Amino acid sequence: QVQLVESGGGLVQAGGSLRLSCAASGSIFSINTMGWYRQAPGKQRELVADITSGGGTNYADSVKGRFTISRDDAKNTGYLQMNSLKREDTAVYYCNADISGYLNRRYVMWGQGTQVTVSS
Image (cartoon, rainbow, N blue to C red; front, top):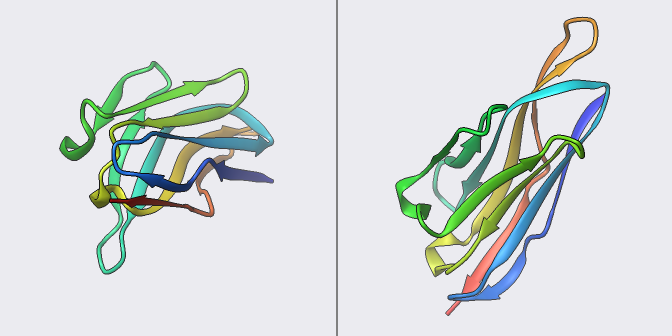
């Protein structure tokens, strides 16, 4: 009924940029907080950044000043602009969204993940 689809991952050289997108579809009344997480091999999944419905943002210290999270509620889509990428940013990136559906339904959804690989 509700799903998230991510796109925009890939291979990039250190210092380069990528933009991830997360499109929500289905019976959506509104999207509350949207976030991006990442998981590198052998490590736990960690929060990269999130953004509230009011536009408030929160970033992991490791990405502050390099990554920017944004959202377009008209398109039910969130974005993560990643600049000055480093090798340690290599991971699978997951979108997460807290979604209010119709009839008071609520969903906490995860995307399928998109691989970001930063080469030296």
